Length: 259
Image (cartoon, rainbow, N blue to C red; front, side, top):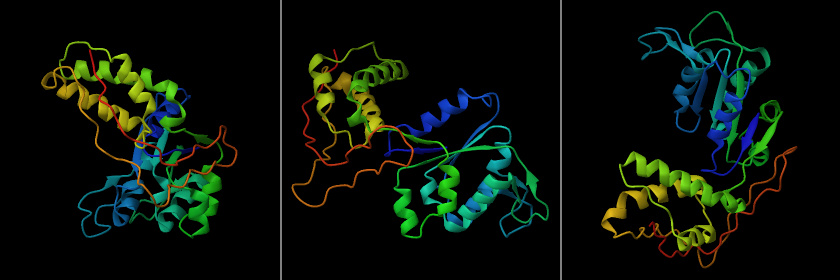
């Protein structure tokens, strides 16, 4: 399965939900952020290594594929994986076998792989940055997570959820957003998607006592007056729903308040 979506849309939560509602729910859910692991370490991270297999291998390490045996392995930002690592991941997907770094024998695993990306993988294939065979192997069931600006009806529900979460976490009294605040939230472009909304609500809760009930003004990421606009995500083959436009809109804010 391949989950498409812009950064901050909640692709990881979708992967968790898929695992939790599957027959593998009682088995491990293992996450790997492919963009955060250096190229020289990612093979060891995914497949593990044998003690002494390289200079810093002071002890044997179990890799993510082995840890996820029987469950789900979530490859986040799979588009940032190197071609060399992609070829090895493809082999595991096809054969359900791999060799830890430095090992002489292969290991058998039963792992479901769910991958996610915010890149246009078809373009990455055209540029020689992503293997076409791995793309088709992962894209068996494509899933598109729309940006928050294309599902504005979710904004009040998410804002209320985060407000309850953070007032409890920071020991604040229960609060509610004003009607004006909901209107301001609904008009914002949300380039950072759900993550941006979550961070804003947390900021409101943290600073509220010092602001006399007024929410802080969000950081000023405003649309440029001119210049190229971001390219929209291309709809993946076989996915449902219309891909969103990533064109820039006005990002001016009023100050939402919590009562």
